[in-house]
Image 1: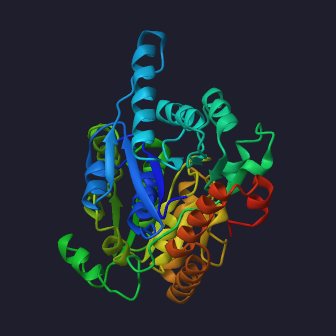
Image 2 (image 1 turned 45 degrees about the horizontal axis):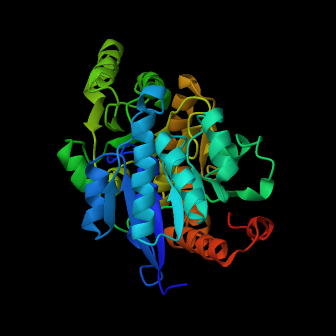
Length: 391
């Protein structure tokens, strides 16, 4: 085998939409370039593809139309184009970050044709069983980011193909030692003596932002010196944000709720928060990347028992878990942490310790890079699974 291993990553689209794209960007950013050369194929251009090129990563855009009879020729052409790219760049391994999509179907077929290992990285709870049954059949390894995600592959006969590797956070970037919250407070005209409760996530119904606002309306009556920040881009071209703003107005909480929109300075925003809230609805969160980011910043967390979140947040130790959709329980948990600063601080410190132990980016990269090497060495699935690549 050559000195460097050529790894091709498959991205579903060229823009940043959520935690999956952030996770892949971190992997690309810190991959050991002395041993691995990364390539990325996108289905479209956007902020993500531009970021990859700024890191001197060779990229290719291969647009695929829906896999229907009318577009079958287009799909076959896409497979051929990707196969040519794989042969031209002497790709050793394909790693798909594109969920159960036509891009993943295309890339698993190419891996089979080229006779190289294929990794299917499952980052969502939503299941497209028809597609996933096809993809997993031809995958060499399936990475699930949580036990909850792993459970959806109960139909996979060879359980040794399934491993869990949780997402990770850059502990240098999300560092509570670096105090950056004052700048955020100044920007949003938040008083030094005011508490800040915030949430970060796409403005999307299943993210539970409406439940968060209902909780806000209950917390507000207990303590007047609180500001609430909602950070995230609207998934519906502004329409859903307007719905949430109307809800806040009807509840009479507009003065204390800040819609910050899309932001890239997440560590700074988290640094300004006294309590972080994840209000997602039941079984929506496959993992909850922003939860480990908040915990890395030593912020106490109030989160719903959604999907894989209870695997991260230890009840009563690193945060408080509440039932999805229960605004009253959410308000009570947030209020309790705001009133008991000693408990809140201890939870934050315990959260940071847990992230350092299990979810640091360097540890995550070692697991991924080790998996690549084992696959290319021909290590069997049973041994890979037995090596405990997950915490």
